[in-house]
Length: 334
Image (cartoon, rainbow, N blue to C red; front, side, top):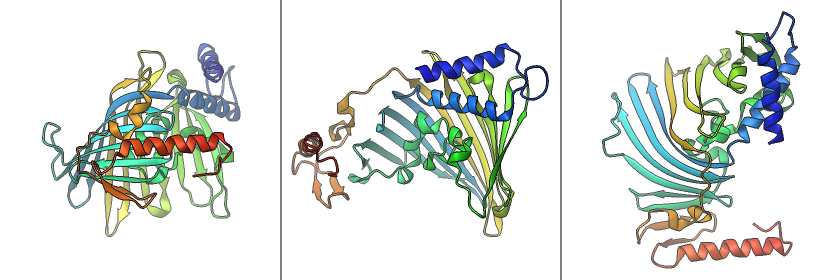
């Protein structure tokens, strides 16, 4: 809370003073401005330790034709634990209607370092180690890091405050980064992170009036002919603060003899940051599985079908044993 109050106070003082980023009586150097906005970004991320939401995620690929991939997602989370229900529609050359039967239904639980993925159409449940970068993209779109990252880059947890921090950007012989900050309106300012060797750049526009959040950004990589433009729409949350209502990204890159254009769109349909899911939400029994589902545990190497043994009880007992061993000092046990 102290972090939030400090960041809010710093932004409020700048706005109340009629702050102009560079020039005029209220001039502040770029280094100090970056520090304030990084603190605001960190404070914003602290607003979402738990909650539930529903959102749409739409991907449209355009090259020789069109491919549509639309997901409707219900999600609950508490810390690093997450429950997710997903419906997906896949089409070529025309946008699917959401009142059509989904092409895929799946449920996921991310808990205790594992991901449980239940695919209803295949009647299979897969259990694997939870490696963040390998998770389905929809699971990475919860508020942190999803709301505070470039769309499609939540895989690397490359949030805006990390991009703004020179210490978190590794410099090599082929990549040396510098930062340029300039005014872009009464309450807006622009930061460009530029690779002085390759010419690649990421430009972000932050709004002091919107709690230091990003409202637009652009990425250019001349070597790979990659270009991306993104926009973010923020709205007031019922409990105070802001939530990300929409996030759109258009990116283009060379693919074979031509160019591929990818359009990504995220939209929050509902959001309740006060909700805290019960611990049972992250148990296997919270998945809508009938008997006879094939369970493939790629962590332990075991395979069985639900109904052959009490899977829920087994998981609960294993988790209890793991916690007991930790309390006894066996913290390295996996």
